[in-house]
Length: 272
Image (cartoon, rainbow, N blue to C red; front, side, top):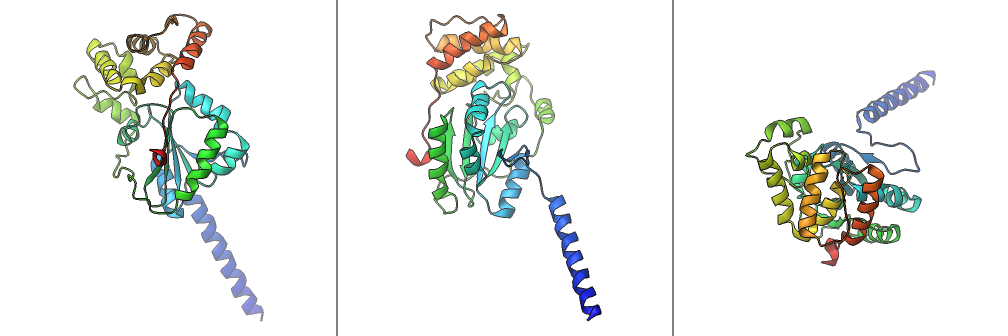
């Protein structure tokens, strides 16, 4: 009897050790606070975690200079009801400046952009721009009906190279194609030819690029603000006067008015 109890206890200890080792090896999202959404900062780790646990994915493309992205984080994604809904997904943040290879693979050319990927690697939601909390909550609840059923929609890009910003920057030069997002510093590059390529790319996007250009007016680097304003002023008729050299508070007032004129809009894939 004593021997049997020893065997059972030893078996339980082994199982506990195995579970602890598995937990230690599992990628951890950004926050452990139950009042916050859990976000993976690594695209690759987040997708691996979702695949291993058969969970749908929500991918948020953003950048530190994107005012609309910050507004979405603070005013919408932090709300308790929305946090509860997002916990049903594996949530991944993709900084387009630090992960330009991921942004290019998904053709993320305007921010913020959110994608919902079902458990069959199909994109079933594609939302561009800022959404009010009520509208976003409705979208995230409605999309859950499609997160585990094959829909026949576009699948996610495969074999995205796992490169970092340093490698991507080193590989780029004057002959490289300029993405409107990813290597944003090219918009304010010291070489006129590189700046012009970036501005031409924004111009090719038409009205869809306007919200991104407005967000770039908040960029901490003066060169980016100058180039973004030149590009915006040529393509958007406005009476707002913006001075890239002005103090931050003065620039913020002008940017606020421009944001009111340039509202990002897009329909989910299911509504198209």
